[in-house]
Length: 354
Image (cartoon, rainbow, N blue to C red; front, side, top):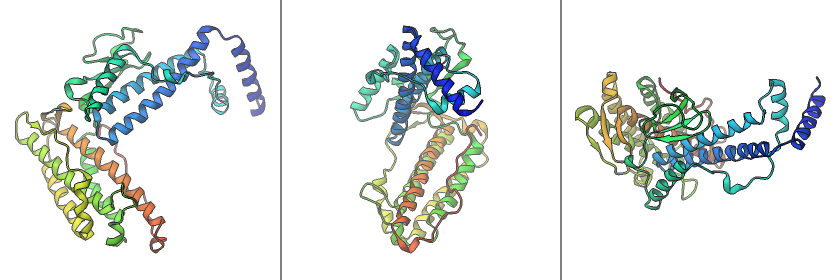
């Protein structure tokens, strides 16, 4: 069948279906549209929460995003919008009529979700993340989007889906789920990535800021060195003491890294090299039991060394991507470096669970 003929047939069928649409169909269309937009809204809010280091709030938004996605998927199937692949391709190109949307209902949620968001609102009003005692593990039914908190017991109370088919948002996994192999591989590669990003650039260039709100490349490298030292202190406590309570104080801020702007880049890189070498020495050869040694954190609750290592990598990778973008933008404004390029991708992803 020719493409134009398929499009014409799809539009004719869609128009006929719209004319025959029942109240139930209209409700499903609106449910799909609202769920889809709610999914995107919560997903982006989760990303922003991570940028602000509100990881429990991010976990809450991720769970609510998954819940809205499940609801949208349920409505999508009710509308019989999953057909043959050929018809799905036509739908992908042509789109589907959603109808008028009440924007106020995009993030419409269940009573439990409203309660969770009320807790989040209280935390934000106090300028902080949710604490461990304020947000338990979350589970989302992948069939209907029902969300529950705490321990998952039995099938979904709304649709009967078994617990094995629920998506978990556990506090212990909030920073990521990289295993020891992937963690070590990332930590071993970071220094090489940093040296690649600054290669061929002079000290004045590396101390330059794009604007008042954006740190220089030197400051970011110094900040990563400071954060590595904080992680190593926490790792030592977890490995050498029993059930330590980790300080809830926020690690060194970017503002405290301003002193690195006036230092030669070789000195800044040496500072990073020294702390990272000590960290790798501490972690090499650890047993699985050592990686799972636990402590307590006021915000994250019971955590282990894997949790803290994932925290470090999540933070470090975000800044590496930021540095790559800053480098690109600075070079674009400086004719001296018009021919300077980085041939390969410097910041690579790691495989979850390795």
